[in-house]
Length: 425
Ligand code: GLV
Ligand code: MN
Ligand code: MN
Image (cartoon, rainbow, N blue to C red):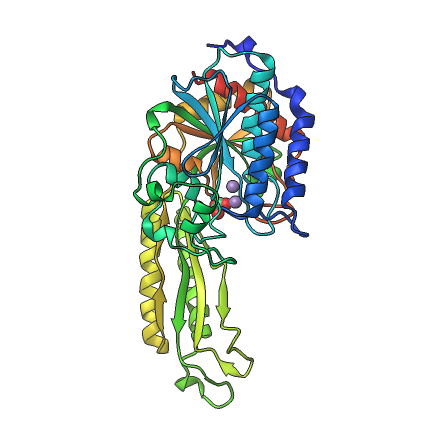
C-alpha cells in the first residue's frame, strides 16, 4: 500500500485536463451549449475522443456489455478487487460541459498520473465512463450504470428517444450493447471485484459558491419519483361561450394541482422534511390549441425528490389523492404513464472520512453536503458497494450551458480523489 508521502501528485496534468474539457466541448457543441445524447452522437463523440486519448497515454480501454467505457492500467490483471471511479458521458440537451465529464476526466487523470509515474503498487483503479445517465433523452435515468446491476427492465427498453423515436433497446444496440443480457437483467458487473466506487462531480446547486467552498464531501443522494407524462382530460370548448360553472378546463385543473402540491410541499418543509417538487414539462396540444379554445387536454411531467423513500412514497400518494379530488371538483380526469422510482442513497461513512481527511491534508476547505441531483454513485451504494462522492464548486447551476467550474478547484478535487484511491486499498 502507498503511504501518505507516496501519494500521486496530479498537479502536472492541469493543461491536459483543460485540453480534454475543451476538445470534448468542441465535439459536442450545439450552438448554445453541449448536447451529448444518451446512446447517440454527442455521447459517442466524447467516448471516441477519450478512448483515443487514453490509448495514446498507454492505458487499456475496454467496452463493457452495456457499452460503457472502462479504462485501466495495462498492468492491471483484473485479479484483485479494484477501486472504481467515474461518471457519465452524456448531457442534457443544450447542457453544460462539466456535468458528468468532470468525473471521467478526473478518473482518467488519476490513471494517467499512475501510468506516467510508473507507480503500480497502489490498489488497482478502474475508471468508467457511463453512457445513458441523463433522464432527458428516454425519460429514464441511470441506464448505463443500471444495466450493470440488472436494473433496466424490458419495459424500460421500450422507452423512446425524444427526437429520433428509436427505442432504448435499438439505441443501445446501435452502440454495441448486449441488449439481450440487459433485458434478461443479467448483472454485467461482478460486485465482488469492486472494493469501492468514487465519483467526482460538479455541484449543481448554489450552496458551495455561496459558502466559498471549493470542495464538498457528499453525504447522500436524493432519490426521485416521476411520471414523464400525466394527462389531464377535460372538455374542449369555445372560450367565450361556456360559463365557468359548465367548464371542464384541463389547464385550470392542472394549475390547481400544481398549487395544491406547492401548499403540501411548503407545509412539509415547515416540518423539516427534505423534499423538492418540479413540473418541468406542461403542454397543450399544438395541433389543436388556440387562445379561443378551452383546453380539453393538458399533459405534464411530475417529479419529487427526497433523501427519504417514505417522503417520496407519501408525497406520491398525496399527489394521486389530489388528482382524484380535482377530478371530482372540476369534472376532469387524470391518466398516468408508468411511475419511475430511483431510490435515495447514503454514501459510505468510512469513505466520507477518507475524503474529508484528504481535503484536510491538502489544506482544502470543504464541507459535508447532501446531493440534490442524482448520480450513478447511488446505484453502486444501493448495490452494497461502499461509495463516496466529491463535489467541485461550480457557478451558474447545471443542466444549462452556463456551468462554470474553475480548473484550480477541479485539480484540487482530482488530487483528493487520487489520495482517496491510494488509501482505499
Ligand atoms: C441528473 O442529472 C439528475 O437529474 O439528477
Ligand atoms: Mn445531469
Ligand atoms: Mn451528472
